[in-house]
Image 1 (cartoon, rainbow, N blue to C red):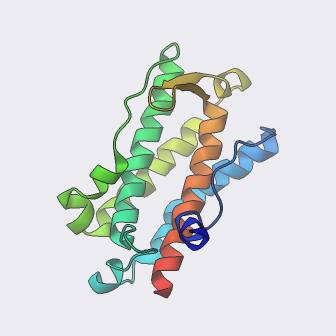
Image 2 (image 1 turned 180 degrees about the vertical axis):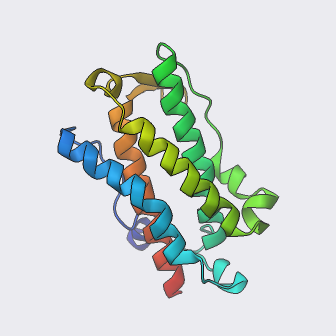
Length: 175
């Protein structure tokens, strides 16, 4: 069981930070800024056969991970914008495991999601770098988790998410 946990969470599970200093937020923004380039470097030269490698038994393929990142980051970007423009909106959750099994996630060329992530992250960084201290405290309600999530925590979650899935891809490439 311990091995599966390490394969599922190669960098560890997300832990809510104890500090949301300006330095930490800048570090997390940099992770988001660099993610599309790092993801492309890890995947762009892989063959179709290599894209079907998995980071763990019954885990997603590299192709599914890349498409999942695009799906997840689009949803997160929308959640940021909802929290900024509405008073504690309830976000719409989605079943990421079912999305990963859809035809496009299992078959589409990864370049489509790499391009999407590149453009999306450019927009996301512009938005994040404009935040006031007050905006970092804006929240959305996550109905499945039954809690409020503020935008500074969501930034930390998505910085972790980038590194988490890059680690998955590096594991899969070793298989």
